Length: 237
Image: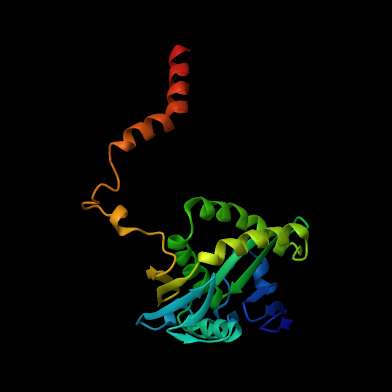
């Protein structure tokens, strides 16, 4: 939709996940967005001086409860939008590379989505296998590009979705976040059923033989073999 403010109109597109703004003074990438433009979020300077904590419960990668209260997905996102907006969370000002070739500057408000993303990454950090997590990180930019360019119904997007859904089967547990003046700070996370974090191995104290420091010497030597070969070659030149 078009929204009038002062001079010529700028474009505003709103849905449950976000509001986007384009046009008018935003067409100058050097100009700061006007404070009066924002609809969902207060400025971080005007956000509460006291932090607010949220406990978010996950089941198979989806948030299902806030502070122990379960609710449908649309109500949950709406609640996070309201809470996050109050704390100035979710503002974004960026220049995009459009599919047709141009660069375009836009501003976005995504308070609930910002909280969800930060919390989701936190619960994944203890429930996903290392290589699965790395593979997902490699694929997500491509997945996002498909959606951005309008390929939601493409076979490649559906194929990736199957893989992503599979990775989320073990993403269960809870995350505690602290909201403060535009920031989402993860302060705790746990999974009683799927955590791969083993304190008896990760400890800096006595691990009762779970990890032998001497094993690292051989690992480092083998892992650095290609570097030693290259260094020897340089010495002969």
